[in-house]
Length: 242
Image 1: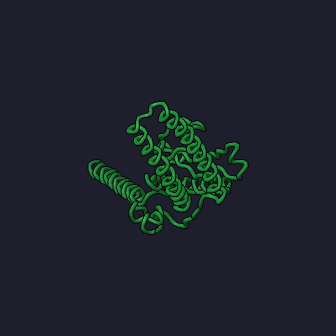
Image 2: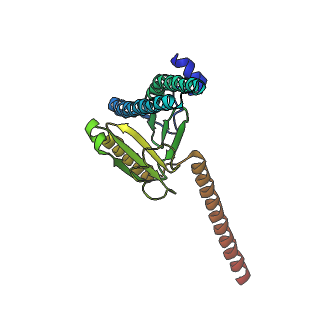
Image 3: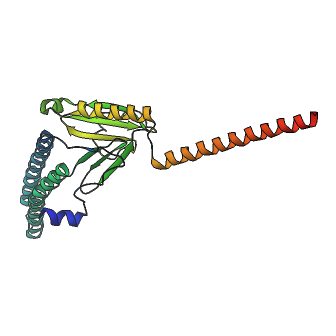
């Protein structure tokens, strides 16, 4: 069933590794699934309670109308309402479970890649040369579960996102989140170290290194040509003087 659903949604099991070597794979903590399941369960309880009150209102309306045709229509509405709730509960839980299992955080020596989502897949790749800020965000409930979100912001992003926004995927292409991890400080230190090494050693994309190499070769050739021209001018000046 799981494989069929993933094929139907066209969701790959794992993303391709980003450019670079020494990949490190991180996953959301088990407590993150518990945290999401509790929030989802609370939402389902509120939905059922709201449905019950709505059906009570329909019953009152039925007695006041007293028309058999309207009573049958309202009865159909009741059945459809209960069917929709009963069907969406297992479907919603399954999607939430897949969202947890197929959430990937990959860090190499040159870049990082984050993939999240099931119905709408969001995949972001950031090279260390563009990363400007790394911050840990943790709400009160997250502290209770021992998890946190690690925010990674690259060049070109706006101001820091507020707490009401940073939990929504895909808000900003310049911001990525390691959501629900229980080792946020370890990941932050790893990214900081690789950003530092990247800047110290001048690592970059192969195309950029090739361009820099070509530029350096062109500069050396131009310098040699200038030296030869100066030497030739000195020889010509000496010959003219003699």
